[in-house]
Structures are given as C-alpha cells and as structure tokens.
Image 1: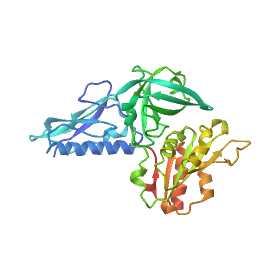
Image 2: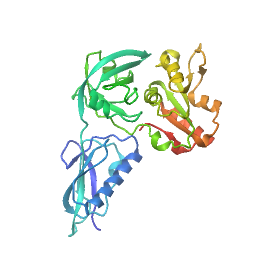
Image 3: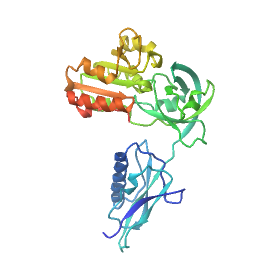
Image 4: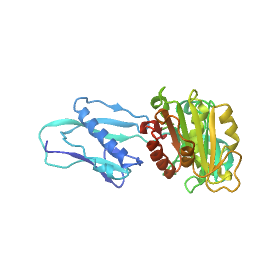
Length: 339
C-alpha cells in the first residue's frame, strides 16, 4: 500500500522493456495490462524467469523493487510502440518485494524465395513462397498468418493469412494478396525474388475447440481477399461430417479469386458454394446479386442453435452478419474469426 508503478510511453528506447505491438482494440490492451498485473503479483512469490504466449513471447524478468499495490492500465489507452519503463507514482515504502518487468521479443524473420506470382483476379495476386520445412511445420490451424517484409529496412511488415491448408505441401505457403499501397512491393515481387517471412502466428479458426458434436452445420462467410484463410479451412477437410455452406462475396465476377476451385470445394470438400456479386450485370450460373449476409438469411438456418459460423472479410459484412445470425438464434461463442 502507498505505492504504484505504471508503464509510461517514451520516444526512443531508454527503459527496461521494449514493446513493439499495435493492438487491434482497446479490449486487448486492457487484457494485456491485466496480465501484467497478475504477473507482478506472481513474481512476489515466484522469483524466476518465465516465458509464455507463442504469439507475443513476453519475457518476465525478476528484479528487486519496492512493493507495488497497483499496476496501472493507463498504457492500454493508446497503441504500443517505442519504449516503456516502470516509474514511481507515489511515496516510497520500506518493504521490498519482487516485481516483473516485461520485455517483448522481436519477430524472427527468415529469407524465403517467391516460387510463383500469378494474377488471381482483379487487383489480387496468388503468390507461393518457399518457406522451408521447418516454418511450414509450424502451421497447424487454418486461419493462422505470417508477417512479411521486403527486408529489415521495412519498418512495418504486412500481415498475411495463409491460403493453403496445413500440410498441403511440405515447404511452401500460398497467399492471396490484395494490391494496396502497403502490399504493392509484394505484388510486384517476381518469381525468384526474396522476401522475409516471420514465424507462423495467431490462433487461427479454433473450431476444433469451439465446434463440438452439437454443431451440425457450419456457415462460412467471405468477401474479397478474405476467402484466403477460409479456403484453407475448407481444403483442410477439418469440417468433414458437418454440413458446410460457403457464401463468397465480391463486387463482380472479375474480382472473384479461385472461381476455378468452386467445383473442387463442392465435390472433394463437401461444401455448398454460393457466390454473391454486389455490382454484377450478367451473373454466372447459380450466382446471386447482393451481399453474403443477406443471402444466408434468405436461405435460412435449419437449427441455429446447432450452427457454427466462420468469418473473414470487410468489417461491415462481419458486423451485420453477426448481429443478424445472433438474432436468428446462433450462439455468439459459435461465431469465429481467425484472430
């Protein structure tokens, strides 16, 4: 009692820990802050070095310091970056205890060769990268991703979901890359070029954990390049034994990747595929005009309480579909994203 340590953000590295994370939401930041508080309390009883979380790999380092009664979550109110350190926030007290200083390990990148780079659809490239057997073996769950950069001079690497199923090849990953200002360098990297690839990251689609025997049907909703991790899920055949409906939305048929794989997904993977085009004139056979979230509601759900959902796509689609499906009776815990 009577003292506290808080994490404060500074320009440059001058403190006891280095954080290089940008969290996707304030909720995650506050969860991380809570973890720091728990670790601080635990360090008082366990003065040792620990490591956890394959994604973040924080290192907990014990150090003698004045007892703390609070680990402030004030640092969670803004994106993490640069350096941070613990500082006194109140009057000193006499009793000494162990507290924890958090250090985030940098991502490890390996130089890899681009095997092929082909047009998949308008503004989309299908790129295959030889990552080697070791890195390929780290990929276990559809929906996981890697970071990629041109070289170590690139300050912010891109995050790219793996489009091939785990174990599809022994040493390569496929990626569906949408051309943007941040990804043009990768879209323009020809076969034989070098890129740097991180370790495999993220939990992926945790349907092995979330979809028990009570889930009889799985609805798969994808838009644009969001089809990439869902292609991996379908081709993994992890969902065999369940009825699978894939709703894949694009603006036009020219913007739709993997159109040549629809018959394979239906015949070999057991998925019913519904293509939706929001701006199409002449529709391909069996396709619909409109949005995927509207199409799935038009078709209805036989047993919403026994239905699971996988999403990847634009925020509006995910938000609207989640709200509508929950109203229809789908359990929130049965609707999964890949992060």
